[in-house]
Length: 78
Image (tube, rainbow, N blue to C red; front, side, top):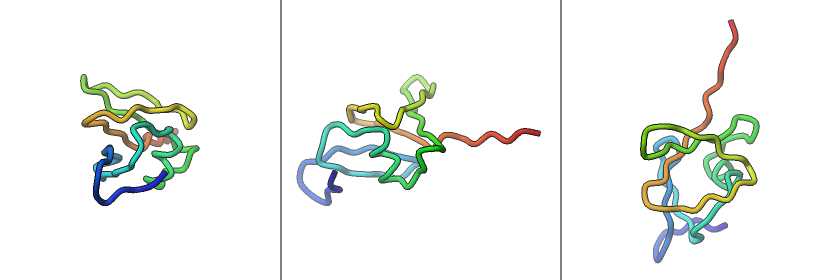
């Protein structure tokens, strides 16, 4: 997986930060690696209708315009 600076690339956002890669698909783990999110924390995809869904580490994600992700929130008991 290479990060692209110029030429054809695919863009996605994680927690508001823009990432560019050469491939049209990436795994959830690949997104977490680039964004510095530990696998045990998890990743959510922000959908166009305002809902969210969990993305598995080994799930292949097709990058389309406007794909947005965020670190899964941590819940505290008490």
